[in-house]
Length: 279
Image 1: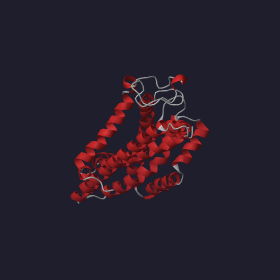
Image 2: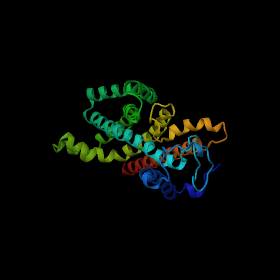
Image 3: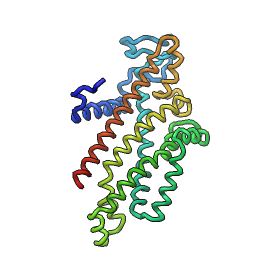
Image 4: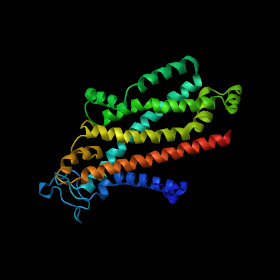
């Protein structure tokens, strides 16, 4: 099915993408104010109710309001990936720029260390972390942060090496400026758009991986609302003809990942276009 022409127009597509992301962020931040019910309020007499004025999206098998749990679930669905992105981006960018500037043995050592981390699947590290530190959002986010560092560092390192060879950087070296000054003033600002693009990609991966871990029962623990956990909890109700809980949570995960991926693609395109124009 071809994409409609109006959706292919970059300004409108960007606005829609950003609008959805901002809406989901606002839903998570404002959940305590806009959620109609306590997300953990159990009422077995109201179990599996269809959508109504009292419960706009219905209730789950424990009588908990689905809209409230989806709103509160947005907090964990966004907080965990944001934590992963913050740690992996800062560490990965710092290692990449340092390796690109120093070169030689330091670059080779950091590259080999990143390759070793890259060899371990993210979910495997997350599972090991839950065994060592116990289940929970923090332990899983910590493991995913470590596993995503190479994804950011390898891309940023290549861009930083290219910047390292640019004439304006060589001119700064000849003028006697320190490596720290040159890195912060000339190299890092030019690779930041690429850093943001990679961070957006990692955010999408983190959303899926954290939801998968929660689905397995090793991430966010009950009764805290979480989209991945809601998919698992709603499976039993699907066979009874009530797929709403799993469908709503799964749909929100897909929408969030798609929007973040589109945003990262757009950032990458703009970074490439700006550097082609600069060349």
